Length: 264
Ligand SMILES: [Zn+2]
Ligand SMILES: [Zn+2]
Image 1 (cartoon, protein in one colour):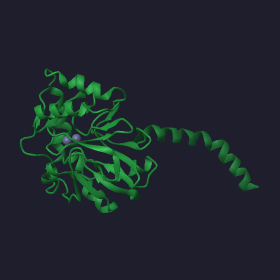
Image 2 (tube, helix red, strand yellow; image 1 turned 135 degrees about the horizontal axis):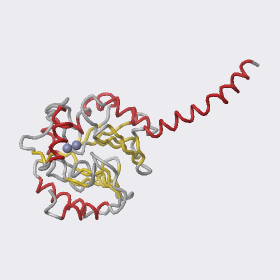
Image 3 (tube, rainbow, N blue to C red; image 1 turned 135 degrees about the vertical axis):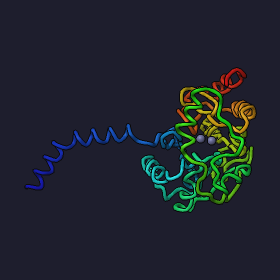
Image 4 (tube, protein in one colour; image 1 turned 60 degrees about the vertical axis):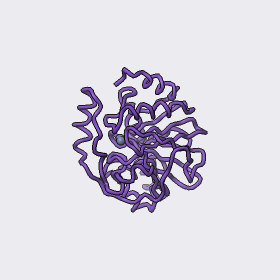
């Protein structure tokens, strides 16, 4: 009887609170479902992505150093088990995308992939290449000083198991195409999910306060060429390493924005 009454009291008294808690949890989740097979994992100023494929989970990028727990928590919030991550694909070798990759790889046993041009960064754990410059303007300058420079110059290096090249499809998902897009970084790749009409853009540009050149580039003119080449592909939506989802006409918006040579 006592147990029964407690159960009722528990239900009457605590259900509303539980509802509030679960509502708060939903709004604070770091996992945002983008499509049937794709989740955005938000880790502060940088996003990673989680893909479901026929061959298990694919993690695209792995955040700053010491973010493994944050990544795994976001993976859980997406309804998946981090132990099921079987592949780790890097859009490029910068520290904010590859910083926790060594630990993720060690703890999951995931196979790692990147473009060959960034092996020199990844194999040596170098934050960026010499000669990488900050985009002109006050906003990139502040972003660099506040968010990028304090991140340091090195991260834990690791081995890439398989290199990816332009035009090939992901070995574990043959409808996902690699687009080599150098300029931001020599080994940068974007991923085109053809069937879903979505581009995982990495850092070809950012979409924090609208579409803009990434804060850092090795060669901004080449980055612009790559942007326009990527934009010639068919996709309606695009997600970025930094910033928000572009939900409609994404390839046209990229083309419009970056075909204007006056845009810095
Ligand atoms: Zn980058
Ligand atoms: Zn980045």
